[in-house]
Length: 195
Image 1 (tube, one colour):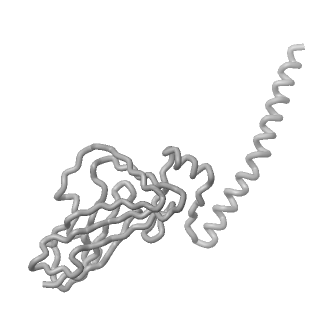
Image 2 (image 1 turned 90 degrees about the vertical axis):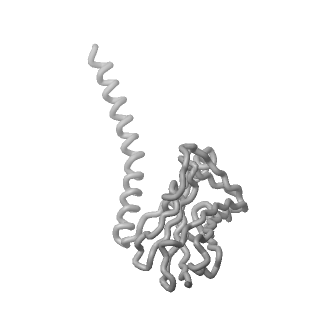
């Protein structure tokens, strides 16, 4: 008589396991096909945002993945302005670097988190890619975390004054501005200072 409840329990577990396998097999097949197609073409997988991703992002429970220069994730776009346009090292001891982040999305705001009071980083690189000046080395920042929301159609702007002391007249340099918390959110511009 005591074997009956045990048989019922085993039968119930078998049914639940069968249901789990039935639900899991299509998922595994889809993942396998997705991974195989990327491996065959050599392309890097870029997941498309789902409705769940958008909902989590809206509720600040998930942040967008890294983005690239140009039209960026969630409609972001970066612009880099350098002043003066024509740099003369004899008179221009600093250049003003302004990074503007545009939210080109018509409906969605973008949320950016900053762990410290630093918002941007500006690097000056020579023609070989070697960093000759790092703007943040001359700055002091506090450990005050903050968040910024960029509404649809709006923009935020950050500026930094970068010394020209490491530059040589007539040689090309790349001015690179990025957000430390979002290393792929980067924009560059090339300059060639005069005497």
